[in-house]
Length: 420
Ligand code: GDP
Ligand code: IMO
Ligand code: MG
Image (cartoon, rainbow, N blue to C red; front, side):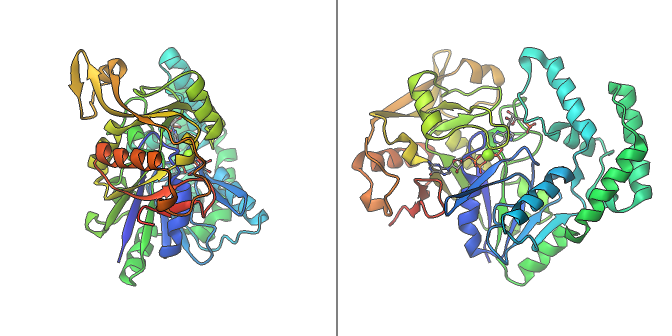
């Protein structure tokens, strides 16, 4: 039995989608455990690009179960569109399962989010505007609407009356109860064949000896408890979130794999100690096509941060990592890895918990020679230029976690084992 959690080790967009797609071959099911349509997971197969927001990134493999767990907040409109778009492209979506306990993102969540962001002004978070924060807020405040409510008119109406009353009084947001009830019941009707008790389904699959992959969205530094709060998302993206997000015991998880990009990116606001601006940052953005898969926003770019990799290894209990996008560094004549931070003259090796320290920390770098050779066509570790091997060795040493696979391109096959 092997039940593997795949998590982002940085601020998201590390290449989790392409990793999940690759590993799906080995398992019976892939499960999303948190987040919502704020995620944009890209998979490229035979030159065709797919971006998944809610559907697990294993869906391109026929016969594999793709499960959306109870920890995900689901925008039914986005999910239905995603299913439709896949079907139009000839992908069969008959092994999709949606948790009846997952919470629903409602249109008023998006309006509140916009209002809140405007209130914050300069201190805005720079969210994806997908209603994620307010949907999780309703869940925790115990007034949320769950997927199972979309199947029962009276249940939905009753909850909507409470919610719409609340949103009207507090934010002046007004929706027609009748219109919303009929719209969301129609979504329930369209989704009903996918809706089930996914925790039970996963338990039964495990009992049959099926291997399962748990797909994290966002990344460790965007986790609501362990990320760069308040510049985070509203869920537990870390490996621990997989247990609560799908309803399994911690003992069932056999391995945790981290996905790390060979440099660092971040979308939205918030601290980013190794951020760089200028020519090199622009080169990384253009070569790495660093534009948000969900919002199209340009991603902020910077050097690889070993402090956050060590932190991610600790917080997630990483067994190993998959390093992606090494090829994006190919043209640089020097590359840098942050080994520690300097704060008020003191050296900090462990990722600090305080916002004021992130802001004022200065990265301490190990500078290495660039390899200035094309790595995107290589198929084995042995073919890598020596300078690239040195870089990988340093990442492992500074991050204190071994690299297991190395990705050198966006296509499914552009990946190699470290011992190849
Ligand atoms: P995710 O959110 O973690 O799944 O990552 P995204 O899909 O948002 O962003 C990763 C981007 O990098 C996508 O456009 C991928 O196609 C691309 N990508 C993934 N791995 C590699 C790689 O090794 N090299 C290059 N050049 N692109 C990659
Ligand atoms: P994937 O799964 C990168 C960021 C937003 C913002 C913050 C809060 O593709 O890696 P939210 O809409 O979640 O309330 O926004 O989190 N963010 C992501 N950044 N990749 C993602 O997902 C993200 N999902 C949210 O930019 O800074
Ligand atoms: Mg993404």
